[in-house]
Length: 183
Figure 1: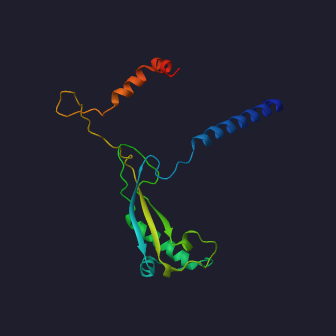
Figure 2: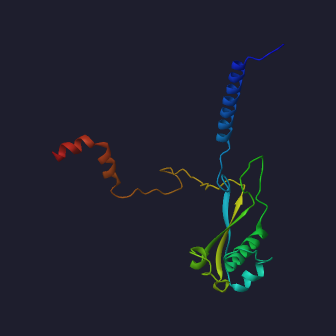
Figure 3: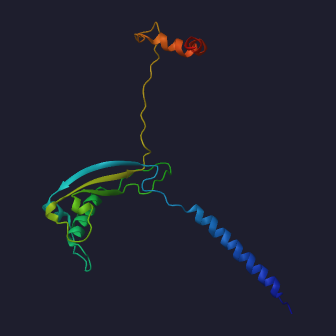
């Protein structure tokens, strides 16, 4: 009969568990979260101010049971619904990938009772809402490209040095002489 030594079985199980633990540690280190629109371009596409009529016009559906503040829920849902009109078309080329490309993020900034609420019942849709919408594009952030021209002393671009500049040049060229004069 072919029997496995119990001591050998313990060693094999221990080695397997150690290998599995090491592999899971390495893999979890690779799965790191990145911020929204990382390596993309975030563009503010709208700064919106709504009154109660616009809030109610963009709200659809019913308020689920258990919602502590229905007015807050209505406004949040309305701004989210409106932002979904602008989702998509974030770009993409050459396999360049950006998390959240084409998505729109809504940031509410007024009124105070909506943004800094301490409990339900302080915000009313009659107060309106102000919010910004930012969209993520796959295109890398744009950088400024400046046209440079070389200015020659006898060239087309007139150069007139500032008065007193020679004193600065002398100051930095002759530090030893300056220290001797100060003594």
